[in-house]
Length: 359
Picture (cartoon, one colour):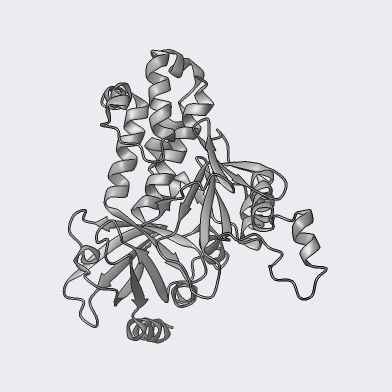
């Protein structure tokens, strides 16, 4: 087994679990437009059938549009993913979304204005979004291209610590060759299994391996623990933030029994300005609240750094990018797939007034 195959499968496993925690579900192959072969999921495009690393249904669909499905290409490279990787994702999106079946029979229907049948194939059509996940982030050209073409990027350090990233990069062929290859193959099969149950009899070897002392076990344990007490927030701009509860354990999002809006304040740490704190509390009352850490998305951070971390610009960023956040919390309450977090406008106005008085 090649080390690159294990690293790729491990990245897929982590990203898949992240999406499942947000309420995403596995797409099931229909046997024609999509199919499974050799343990991989394939989906037909205009030019070819494509191997989908991850393909999932979102927790909700929007009206007046085709249903969407999300694909993620997973790149476990030792360096940042570059521009060609993101360009390929754009090409894949075009190929999938522009695919249509046209046969001689369907073309013949078009000749007859009084035709009884439509010259289309009867099937469910989807709008596909294609994103890219990377262990070691993305180059600046890749980030710029993704932003201009609305391609979601998911760097692993968005939610995993530096120790896990370091361990990931330490997985090489010498490390893999130290272990029984039957065990490694069983681990690979588990990581690739979209419905994988580690306690299933067929994954006994993988279970024992992931309960031993090795860096692969450390990565999986760290990822599962992090995902267990964290949430994904979607900004109106399409940017995502990964919210980690402080302290871990019970929080206000777990107490939601219906889809409702909550209010919040947002602060940043002067000694670590890329880490911001979202303080969520119930409508108008901040006596009981839950704080969440999150990393400011890099494009937003870069914009702020261009103004030397000016406090007034920070307030502008909060207004422009964080006025409303959709937090996926289906893992806490299956009946309530998300919560709506609104920034407290009165609090923002008071903060602006304080800055004005200081000047």
